Length: 217
Image: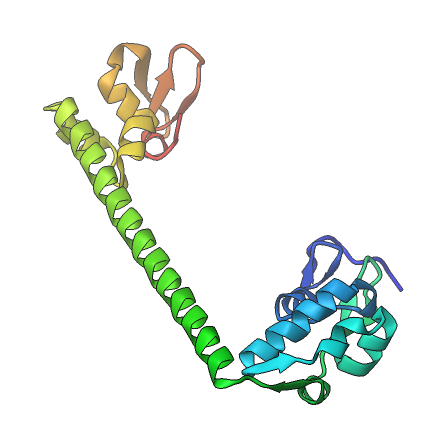
């Protein structure tokens, strides 16, 4: 079998397919990756979502017993440089159901309180991100306006020389904009083709004016 090319179609680097990566993210892994601690955590997570409690004897099982009794093959995916077909395992829901019990009313109330707290934290985080994004946008607009105000009459000239600019960054960094602010650093000429060429004296960099409007120094 030929070696997988880095990031070839459907592959994540050379380690595994994109679907294999998605399987990891959904809680499935090859048998070799399932440590006892990882298996117990996965079973606990499944039981919590199902409003159940893991029976005490589960933690006493040896790793191999735990895997054999409570895990099952869920899918297979290509992994490694040679795209070997690898089985991915996850919690066997029927077995987990047999090795657990329903939560009591008190346990369920505690879990619901934790879920409410998690939802509240998620909503607070989303609101915080929204406020941060709004503040960042306002800061960018304010910075752009300060740049425009500082340029004064030169702003209209820069805008005319930079018809595609969209932000303070382009206003300040494009070659044509820099020429508008520091004309002493540039010289212009008309080429035989009729195109206006702009040249930076210090480096000899020269390009057509229309390209200088978007070229970043």
